[in-house]
Length: 293
Image (spheres, rainbow, N blue to C red):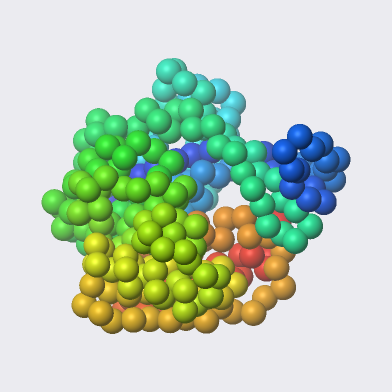
């Protein structure tokens, strides 16, 4: 029996992550002795789908993995976390996407991704998952798959009467076709600088200034400012500023994906924008202060 269309649909990336714990991140030409490493199922798309499911909303993933151990592990993880992965395609054309993230003693990190099978996503994957594009559903996109694939997914959800969230990460300027189909843009300071064309000071005021510029092109622009908070400006000129919640930082890894997952879940439940942003802010704060697992 076919399941009812989920509420949050994530179209995007799946990566098998190698997490390295190190005293510092190496400079050019430098070798550092790390303390430990461990594997983790990730990719912005996969993390966001798991987050939405964890916060009580039906969640589905549209993506691609390869016929390898990494791909099988990622599929098993999605299933065990309550994510509908019927539309995660297995391909023999490339290896499964993966990443290496190096964490320093301050809990911050740098990462390198190898996209692999994620780059094979296309409009055909959107067409194959047509039942997921339905009125009232929320589509989540990121920049770890081809822009044209994102365009196809966004157009399908808009045509069906759903909403589209674009997490423009990693930093990449969306095509005009994609930007025109986005309801909510979510970026961090680095991404906001690229899209807004102005330096973003690491402050809530700087994030708000960038959000004002981005709201000229997007119905809702959200700029996250890490430990400073979240700024949001709508095309109608409404502004929402949310201070960060003080926490003892353990790790920033996955904070943005947790924010997106909770935001999508809250909006799918019918929460007002301000409340959805507040819930997302709280969820991200809880994640970065939790022990790494």
